Length: 80
Image 1 (cartoon, rainbow, N blue to C red):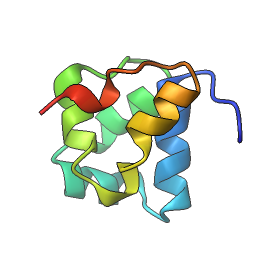
Image 2 (image 1 turned 90 degrees about the horizontal axis):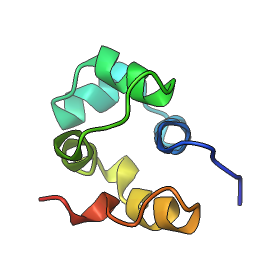
Image 3 (image 1 turned 45 degrees about the vertical axis):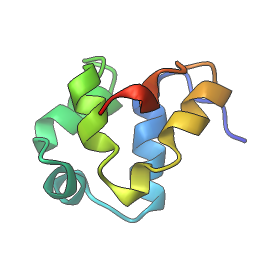
Image 4 (image 1 turned 135 degrees about the horizontal axis):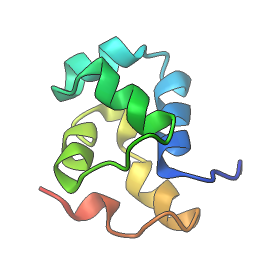
């Protein structure tokens, strides 16, 4: 498994692996393309509400499990 230094790197990996642009992921999650870019590049940490929106996308379904395994937080999937 690839090591991820940040949650943003993991989110970017999942998005790219799914073949999605930031715009497409934004369309699935009601997030601005800029918000996704800031998270992926480490300029912002995702707010719990933002994580909840990201989890709406099927491309992010493994985010909680992978984040926990990578030591990036075990609460990612706890948001409604």
